[in-house]
Length: 373
Image (cartoon, rainbow, N blue to C red; front, side, top):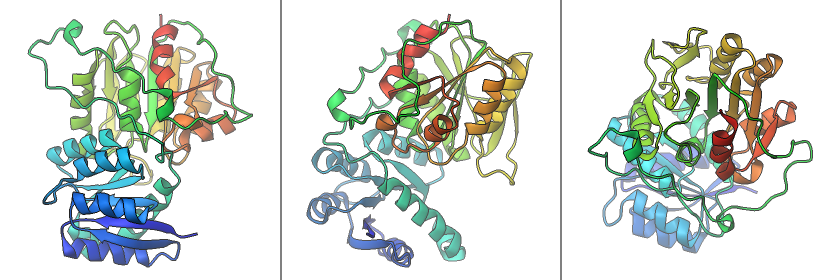
């Protein structure tokens, strides 16, 4: 059955081009279009699409407000279009908080010059998020970033958000091959490494806001994200969390209570001396940053003293890095299927029998705080 898509944008040109690209895929059907957020809500209720593509800047009602209303009234996977700017990143992160599943850069030149590449990316995204866990009976988004505090004291950072009610998540039994999510093994870890992709910005917020300011281990974060987005995302996490979060720079030192986010478009490695190396993105690699590369360097540098976590995301990035970590004696956790937006990366780890534990998203932060001594 074809994936039914509603295209929302105030630009007639963009609506037509997106509709043409999607309609060329025999497994996608454009069932309607809308020119503003209010029309989008009405069309979503009337047409019940499988996926909605959404612009942000529109008259009468912007895209974020529309997403928030749609998630409350008829939860539907939403793909946002965004500009590759710092402001575009901020808006996109707000949209993900509101309930959008994923995003694509809105670049008119690429649509005109390279339609085949754009078609492949757009259609792949639509098919992927159509299968996502976003059709909840209700949707509970994490809190948006609060204004920066006038003090830099860690104790003045906002308290972590309360976990979402169980009713806001689909209930599903864990896969038979998955290990149980019992009490974590307590250990003095030299590094916590967390890798994620689609659904990761919201997932990382939920995990990191549960950690105390005196969290005893350094943290590295690998989120598949464009170069223009990672600085804004790190700033957002830093405002929300008790720990400190920053976009990693070459030579940054690992230290307890500090989370370093791999910059988009580049690769991040850790060395035995306790610092990070930021390297140019290799065009031969699909992901920049790549979870496997960071995990692999952690395995080489810290042997059995790493706790790695693989969160929601499409594909299998992180599996081979997790294999290296396991060979060195380190621990690997995976997010469970029920709480993933896309159960791809964690599933790859679980199916390869590399996960020491499988936890729901709202349990991971608490278990990290319990495991690291």
